[in-house]
Length: 79
Image (tube, rainbow, N blue to C red; front, side):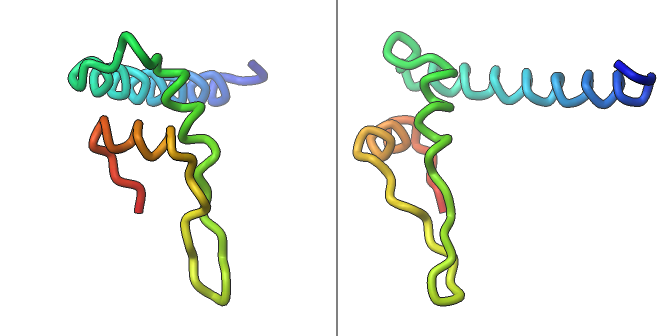
């Protein structure tokens, strides 16, 4: 790290990331999907979801069936 503020920012971002990973892990465990999906698998499914602007209106891009099924299984809604 170049300076102390950079180190503090890095530590804070890592702390927030770890909290989110455990939240996803607990969600998968609660829905009894932890044997089928890891946190990395869950994030891999979500990383391809994006918003596109068509005729000045933002729309969600196409989502694969497996991603739709996973989101339905964990009861997460992408709006």
